[in-house]
Image 1 (cartoon, rainbow, N blue to C red):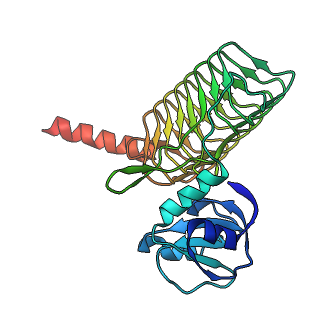
Image 2: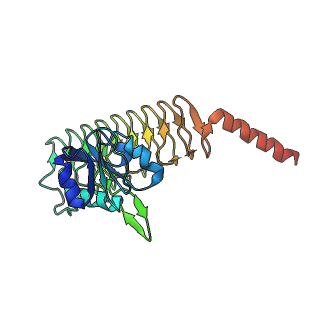
Image 3: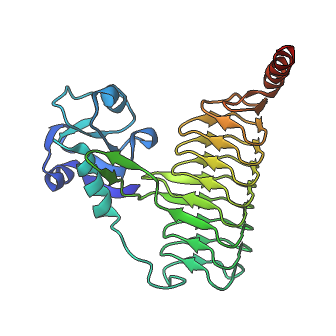
Length: 303
């Protein structure tokens, strides 16, 4: 999430944190660790991820330990970094209910078609010649490109399914967006969640069948085909020209390489190379999976 060059000293005062390092830094964005860029603020509250955060592109890090400050960075020491981070995202993008079926603050091209029963939130943009079928809900800040088709019952921009576990599950405040590029078609009753702080992206020319679920922060490349009932875990990257047949399930935070083909009901638990055909759960190259299945059939006959 981008913010407007806020002085880091003001951020430190706002969350009551101890500032170490360059107190003249300007904060240009707030992002979770896997999305950070130079100028971003992030947080870390577990020793396992201290080095990852401190060595990341983030310029400002909220942390619960007094550590050495890496060159060019600023540290904000706080007892509860997650709560501090969540308070900042709520401050810069507070919860705001959708008050009109089609928000007057949305930007819809005059050539787009919006059918009855749709709800379109604040600051949504919809490009030229796009068709939105009845009863589609598009949450605030989403962006839909030109020549897109979105079928009935689809929800775009719902909150990330992302919680921190303490005595109870604490919800991360979702402030990312959904960006749908040009010439995308999305089937009926799909759910595409916004990112926690970054964007969920559907690349140009990609086509999703009915009842697909795309979780927070997923990046789908161009010309991806996804058949019905696929479910993609958070922060996963699907590269260009991937084909997924029905009911493929993909774990979080993996990459599926360019041109990969996944047969129906494949279960992806780790990153897969591009240009290959995969099958089974856990998914492996289809030729190898078929060999394994043939061996098992022979063993069963021998018994």
